Every structure is written in C-alpha cells, then in structure tokens.
Image (cartoon, rainbow, N blue to C red):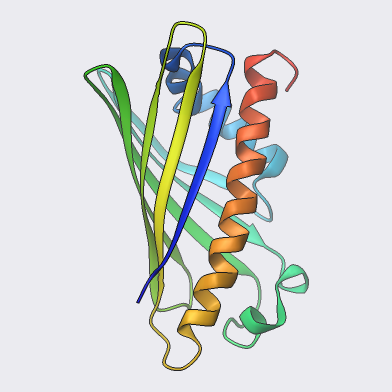
Length: 166
C-alpha cells in the first residue's frame, strides 16, 4: 500500500506566471544550486510549445538521513525526478515520477496550477511506494515527510524568485 501526500502553495501572481517560473530552465538551475542538495543538477530540459519536460538529480548526504533510511541505503541518497508540464484549459497540469537509487520504489505525482489574475495556487498530490517487506510502509512515511519538507522549501524559493528576492 502506498503513502499519500498533498502539498499546496499560493503565490501572489497569476497562474501563468507561476507556471512560467516553475518550468523555466534558469529558475530550475538556480533552485538546484541553492537548495537542491548534494551534487544537484538539471539533467535535461526541453520545451515543445507550451509543454515542458525536465529531469533533475538531487542528493542528500548520508549523514543527514534518518536512521531507518540509512539501514537500506548504502551511502548518499540520490534522487532522480522527472516532471512533464502542459497547459490544460484554464490551468496547468504536471506529472512527476521520482526514483531513489538503491530503493525498490518510486513516487508518482500530479500537479495543478490554477488561479486568478492576481493569485496562482499550486497543488501537488503524490503516492510514495517502497516495496520492501515489513519496513516499506515505515520508509514510505519517512520519505513522504521529507518530500513534504522539500516541496515547502521549493515553494518558498519560488515565492522569493517571483518577488525578485532569490
């Protein structure tokens, strides 16, 4: 059974501006440099009209991992994340897939950016699945908690970027 999570962020700009920022190559590169963790890098970024796909790698030093995770992973945590975004009517839709090196499992997520001319709201829902007998559920909860913290930090970074403070 997977563990669910939801994250919601509201920005003081139109949904289109939020979308434009969150898929911008310069923004992603800077965000990874500033808060992406160990050896973070943008691996790929492509645009086809209003559709954008990107892939990134983020890392967490082994010493910063919770004990339950250190028992499973040998060394640093290396996360690969792919996002695909597109406009869909009056909102923007995203799909995310995350894998963690050395861990049998993944995170699948859906994102939606919608709002008014003066406010955009990003809602992310995801399912964390770790396929390890007996401890998979416990690890899922730890991963979901850490992902929630990462999404909050990324939203805070985006808000500062939109305000010209990043």
